[in-house]
Amino acid sequence: VQLFRAKTVDVSPEAVTIEATGGADKLEAMLKMLEQYGIKELVQSGTIAIGRGARSITDRSLRALDRSA
Image (cartoon, rainbow, N blue to C red; front, side, top):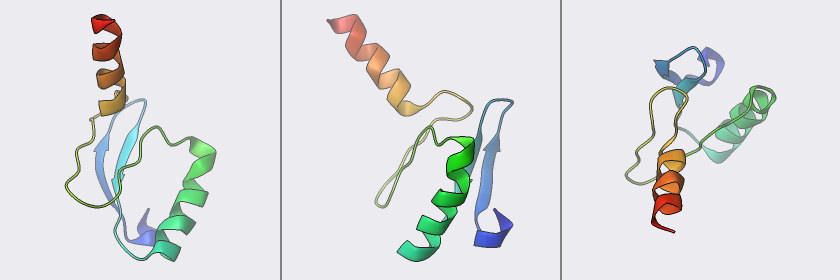
């Protein structure tokens, strides 16, 4: 993370949330490095929201949709 001047925003036993800004080449290189650990959720540009810990915003949205079906 330090190599890419990214910021660790949250840490839990199952997940680490990282904030990174920069050019496309820099961000792509960081994503390639992190792929081996698994990327659960990715948010790019604009106003963003992301879940803390191992749960993601997407997980919660999908569960809400399942209940309404």
